[in-house]
Amino acid sequence: MDGQGPLEPEAPTIPSQSSKNLWIKILANGIAGIISFFILVFLWRSCHYRTTQPKLVLLVVFDSLRADRLAAYGGKLGLTPNIDKIASSGLVFEHAVAPSSWTVPSMASIFLGLYPTRHGIVSATLNPATKTIQKSHFIPSEYVTLAEGMRQAGYATFGCETSGFINPQAGWDQGFDIFEFRPWAGGDWITKQISALADMIKNENRAFVFLHYTDPHYPYYFHPDSVAVRTSELPPELQSIGQIPFFELPKRKDLGPNTPGLKAFEMLYNGEIEFADREFGKVLDILKPDQFSLIAILADHGESFQEHGKLIHGETLFEEILSVPLILQLPKRIASKKYPQKFAQHVSLVDIYPTLMGAVNGVPPNPTDGANLLALVKRSYSSDRIIFSDLVLPDYEKIAAYSKNFKYQLTLPEKQKFLIDLSQDPSESANLAESQKSTAFSIDNAVQDHLSNPVVWNPVLKEAK
Ligand SMILES: [Zn+2]
Image (cartoon, rainbow, N blue to C red; front, side, top):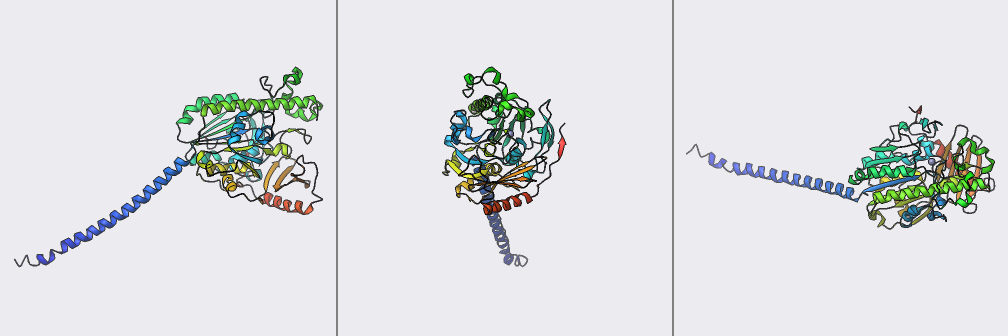
């Protein structure tokens, strides 16, 4: 039994060991429980974020659409009932500024959240025969585009593009799962594409749909069923005046100020807007955006009708070119935070990318010149922000800067300075650069800072294949 003796006192060591194991077990279970709890919280938060994301994000660009053609911006012609309906329940930015005066630099600013002098995508030419891109600055692949940002946020990405400039060959399809492209097709083509893609879009948990209408972009075609085109004022010989070759426009005396030709020209433009809005209405009928959808409507730039001696766009930075519509219809979850219906401060289309990323809990562009407008509107915005617009052409460069009620324009290389008080002089006729030197000087300093910002990634000018 002696042999067993030592076993007896040792016996307690067995429960002691098992108690230690038990404690280790309890501790391990506790740690596992805590880890599981955090995993569950993480999953719940991810699901919560996902479920609070808008199911459909619809970004619609109407090329060359002046703000003053819409009821929300004082338009009296009733051209756009479908856009007006969205504006009546949405958030209207009354003073949105286009980043440039023509399609390529402005669209790059929308897709990248940078001003043209920072993204550098400022040049493209079309082949006159095919009207497709011949030579262009390609979008560097290093950029994370808006579509890529949406994809990273969990969205399937769809694009319907009708501008010959916004060509996949120059990298504009970067980030799109599906990018339908037909240069200069009418809005009815977009309706057909959306009709064909509708099931796929609706079956996605989250879908980002980008549409680019170019009906209001020159040339303007005759829409006899448009109420804007009053046939009594548009005799047959003027029905094709909207299709004069681009390079002939400056020489045409019959398109001078106050001529019947110019009146017809503008009427045809209005008819194209009406047509695009009608087709957009059909897309809304197909996609049926609801309280979980976000819709952003804007124009890449406006259009001139001799207000400052020019037609169409691409040469100046006056208000008829830079004042564009920007309307957001917010999903109920975001709208319930009580945003104002109208917002009067100057904002820029470089703000679109960060704003949409904010609305989908995505990653904002980095770097960016833009701001999340929903955050800015909520904290009543800093009126000190200066908004810029750039026009970079082979022979000259123009920069516009908006600071409170002032608009400053600098033309290079001549260094011409033009200062306007927009609150007193909306038609931009009286240059105050001499009489208000200190204001001009202070905004000019901001312009110099703006110009000193380097291009983020140098785009390469290439021949398209
Ligand atoms: Zn355009």
